[in-house]
Image 1 (cartoon, rainbow, N blue to C red):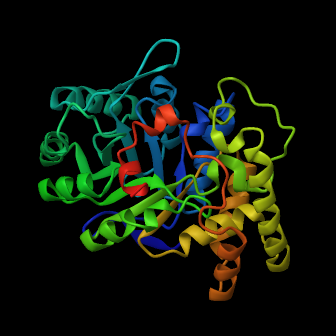
Image 2: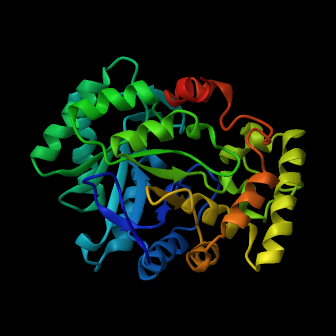
Length: 335
């Protein structure tokens, strides 16, 4: 599989990474045995970047990755961990904590759950408004100096925060939502990252399944599925968005690829500094996604895809308004 460098001095990773969140949290019930099989199949297919968060499934996601990596060469895998999100016993959200003392605590627990001596890429999940980004990145830099962290990343922050963080320590990548229907970062965030030599690990390339080509209007979601509160899956918006998917399906039929493969390939084609994260929860989904690696989009096909789904055509915001308030990146996205 093609390799891509994260940042100027960051790690060399597979051209797509595996986002593991849905295997433990936020998309309804998951099958642990199937999830472990999916992670192992991804590694066998050449995917080396695994993305998680210490709060996914209240730590269960890290334990899942530990079990999936049993017997594997640790140094052949890059593990990316987000920290800082606070949750309660009911699975609710209580804000963020990125104080230096809290970061040391979060890291200690992640190392234990993952069963590793170091984490390849460590990043705050969101900007903590109570803690200057300089303090947060400085604390992670201390952990890097001690050998517990190899590289530092960011997640869902805007251009001012990116610049301030990069002055403290080199940043290898920014994890942020980027897809055919979510292209806000192209306005300010992506140009600044390229200026500073920071790569993008793009999550949501299938817009939480919307661009999978497998979503239907009548699909029933559990209350634990994030999409049950997502504006893009809300009645009225969903119908509009599925019409966009049908436009993509027409192109997919002509290319012999699936809608999901086209959406992933589009993200990967936006630059060598873009690494899409695929959120496959099953080996069947993974097989479809990995098929993208054989797909080379032509300039004409890219133009056709972007014409089928113009910027701003999607109906509904990417998060409910209450959650958008926690995204520092939205300050830049909204101009």
